[in-house]
Amino acid sequence: MDEFLQSRFRAVGAVTVLVLAIFFIVLLFVQYREKKDTAIKLKIFYSDIVQAFLISKNYNSVAGEWGLKPGYKNVEILNNNLFHYLKVKENCAQKPGTCMPDTKYKSIKEKQTNINLYNFPSVSLQNGISIAVETIGKCKKENEPCALIYTDLNGPEEPNAFGKDMFVFLMINHQSVAVLPYNNSLSTDELSNNAKFGCNENADVAMNCCALIARKGWRIDKKYPW
Image (cartoon, rainbow, N blue to C red; front, side):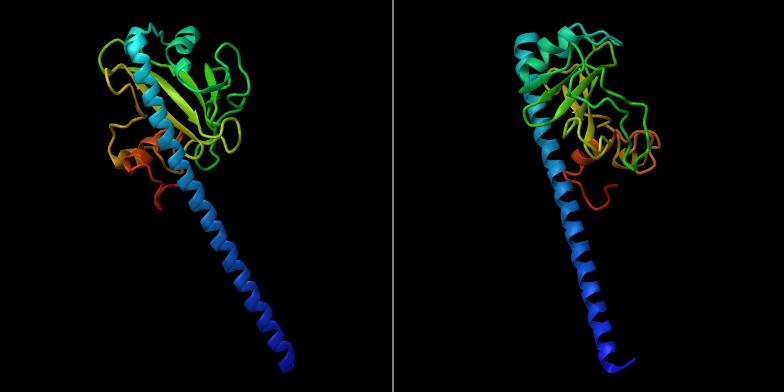
């Protein structure tokens, strides 16, 4: 091979390396922005939902006084005591609409779950977030669980995955703090490594990711299993 061809091959190789390097830098930047935007949006939503509960308490008392029944949709109760105090774009409490996708949500790494929220009482908010509510407890005693608030940061759009666009909050019967990230009381290690709900690639349903992000100061750090 003459010197001219060798120089051409070296030039092509250098350009290829440069293109790949730029590609990976752009990819890392995009992922960084996605993670940052997700954490910010989740933090803002939490502030909004806490404010909604505080306003509702002034008119309707604490959640333990609403009359929620486990296993029931409690549509009228949720409409009057919670959804009414949010900036709702579409109300899908009475019947399903475009608030939640009619599909089973995935866990972090494409692992299929059994959770389909399409028929749950739900609303789509003006900021593009959708929430669905599942009543899980009698909600009578102080700090007793009332419901799960499933929060999809981009509504029915993909990826529809826990820990990426789907995060979970817990409604409790409390005078001042009526909503917390799900499993907020667990240690950081438990939030990360629990086999069933942990914020890791192998968990069955990564429901602890919201609490983990909150624990990190509403940040998604390098260890986060994105």
